[in-house]
Image 1: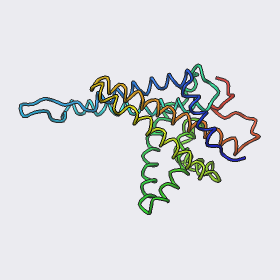
Image 2: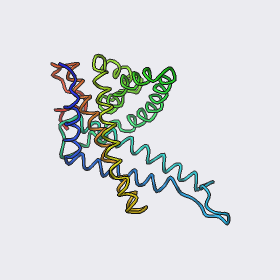
Image 3: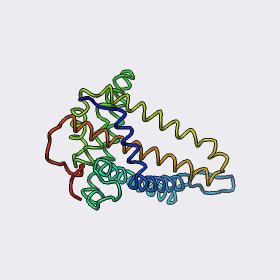
Length: 243
């Protein structure tokens, strides 16, 4: 058996449009709007508007960091949910199981992942893309398997072996689709004005984000099936595990 790009994309779309997917769209849209409202805070002065400084700047920075951590935690819960059979409710286990540890691992792991891809890209584009595809599913191992980010990198490297070219194709398809969807709201958001335009832009961006996470989870589950086709034991947070 080989990895099927179309199955991952269609499964991701199906999960995005079901109840749980729509709940996550709302969550990510609210978090993005909150961050957009916090980030550009400015203080008026006699010479005009300048970036907030001092205590106000510190407060907005802390709020932005907390919103970012909340977004990471939401992505972890989304990965757990989309990798399971749950479509109507989000089990408490997915929201509570080692969520702080997973969030911290995802936060640090994201920084390390970006650095590794950047270093690979320095030596030419191809090595950077190879690292990107090979390690991309580390976040699924952190969220679903409760691994630390170091072990998750190794697990992703092993999981993607033999399917990297198809996974690269999946990544290109998802990126192109996301850009196309975001582009469709560019003009309407300008016509609606600042407030309504911001809401529309962030809502559509949230849909793209949830679709990307759902597709990642379904691709991960498909890869795990190729790796262990006869594994009778459900892993933590996987499809078929009791909530």
